[in-house]
Amino acid sequence: MGDKSVIRLTVTFVVVGNAIIPPFSAKVSRLILHKISGVYRKLAGMRVTLKPVSVSPLFYDEHPLIKVKGEDHILMLRDSNAYFFNCCLITDEDFSLDELISFEQSVIRDVFGASIIIDNIKVEVKKFDSFGFEKPSAIKINFLSPVLLQLPGFKGCKASRYALFPVPSLLISSLIEHWNKNSDPAAYIKNPYWLAYYSNYALLEADFHLKPVTVVYDNRRLIRGLMGWVLYDMRKSKNTPSLRRILALLDYAQYVGIGKSRGTGFGHVSVKCIN
Image (cartoon, rainbow, N blue to C red; front, side, top):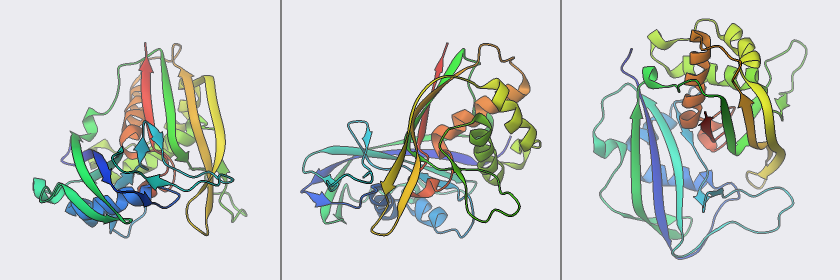
């Protein structure tokens, strides 16, 4: 269908020494990527909306390292502990493996005062025509870092309006916008508003465990989003081309995330099909 590649990197590392890190640990992920990936540096430096880059916070023992408003502890990387994070890069340019990931040194120094040893880097590559699942009976979306779902603009309303419940049409609208901005022309979704509207009927909320969270991003900014999970019942949904498009977008979400500020650590999700 096209030549663009969607590349997901999963980087696992061990810390040498202790270090205090920013309250939103995706800043650490981005610093490490700047040191080891020329492709990341190039894509992250693009001055465009909906950049072809997403980055997760650090995870320790499957839990994201983020500080929620009201918590009095500081975030630290601790000696000998292993951490990991994910990054997604979308590009149609040829590059060498050394440009994607530099293997010149396994020890990276000056990561907020600590050194890290790269333990493993997993690389996955997909094309846009390979996204999707076989129709499941249900699908569970886990929101692993705060998701910022913005409602469409409305005349007379200047302030941004964010939703704290993952209405299917908002999820799918967010994914379509990113997909159409970064996909191959042949994969372009031509009826985005209809597909988003249809998703409200294809994805039926069956159960959920959600909470709004206000995270400390830095010394000045508090950012509010949603975390948790939602289970969508799909048993009554017909296996139509439109449904297959929605499933492709939900698969895509595992790579690029959902909502605003994906490149700074927000909107990281996992998706599980239940048959």
